[in-house]
Amino acid sequence: MSRAHNFCAGPAALPEAVLQRAQAEMLDWQDKGLSVMEMSHRSADYVAIAEQAEQDLRDLMQIPDHYKVLFMQGGASQQFAQIPLNLLPEGKVADYIDTGIWSRKSSQEAARFGQINIAASGKELDYFGIPEQSQWQLTPDAAYVHYASNETIGGVQFNWVPQTGEVPLVVDMSSDILSRQINVADFGMIYAGAQKNIGPSGLVVAIIREDLLGQARAICPTMLNYQTAADNGSMYNTPPTYAWYLAGLVFQWLKEQGGVAAMEARNREKQALLYSAIDQSELYNNPVALNARSWMNIPFRLADERLDKAFLVGAEARGLLNLKGHRSVGGMRASIYNAVDIHSVQALVDYMREFEKEQA
Ligand SMILES: *Cc1c(COP(=O)(O)O)cnc(C)c1O
Image (cartoon, rainbow, N blue to C red; front, side, top):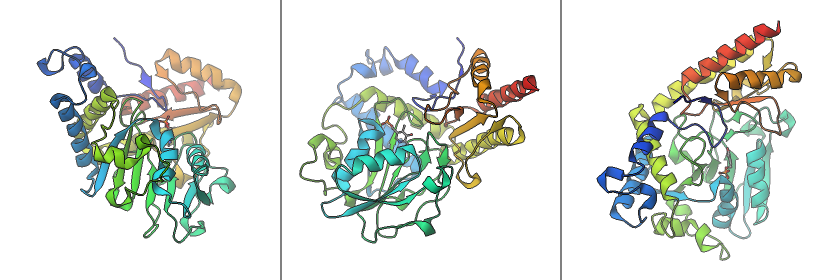
């Protein structure tokens, strides 16, 4: 068996140790004679798996007790609708910060349900940077302020947390949750689709301050109401049981690695290795402002786009997979989430240098 270096933006690489454990437990979970996939979500065994996953996430992120942790379906994109349905009462305004494709999608969806204000936009910076908060036009009594901490496609990341006073901050952390330390209490709500830094797709994790529950619109479907999930331990209906179990295995793996602080140190090293290779070369270029460069998703272009194809073919021959940039951006993109080891980044950097030499 040989495992490739997978730089996919999502669904993304998972820790090999987690896949091995899932494999070992696949047919017969802890001598119970059945797979986790085949268990009732109401069984004591499964409930224990689910509760352990939540507890491990709480430990990893030091989530305060007055926050609920919800495991839901529909991905981050469904949250784009769920957030206004739950948190934007009639007559109120929600502020959105537009820094790229994902935050734009979230604001466009929210606009279907209520009044929103684009309080700041990266447009003037060609979406290669993040406007400073001093330039934001925040609504004083907004229902919430929404932003995406990491724009997975543009490779633009906040390295600071907006200050919104009493107005709850709602953040899409799909592609950088658990990659560096944060203070959960800075946020009203954090949400993340699982398939970047948590586990397989089909699951979204939301961390919500309890006082924000219970204000959903009357038309909000039962299944989309956070209160429903909170009141039922995220098991109002059948949850994505296997994805939740795998997320739990990833949380255990993260703890074994030393937790979020250890991941932050590794991620710092990984991104420095790749950005310095890009910056030192004549061939590769990353256009993002230095203070907004993503640690997780690193887009880069070749000086001559006619070389793109040869670059990708050579990469694939070396087991460096999924480096093609998003169709809207072009060029290349390396996603180096928690599960991507520094050896994979080193293999990429070695190849980039060799490819550049070949062009000389
Ligand atoms: C991937 C991603 C999404 C969309 O996630 P789905 O689970 O596919 O809906 C939303 N926001 C960000 C920041 C993402 O990276």
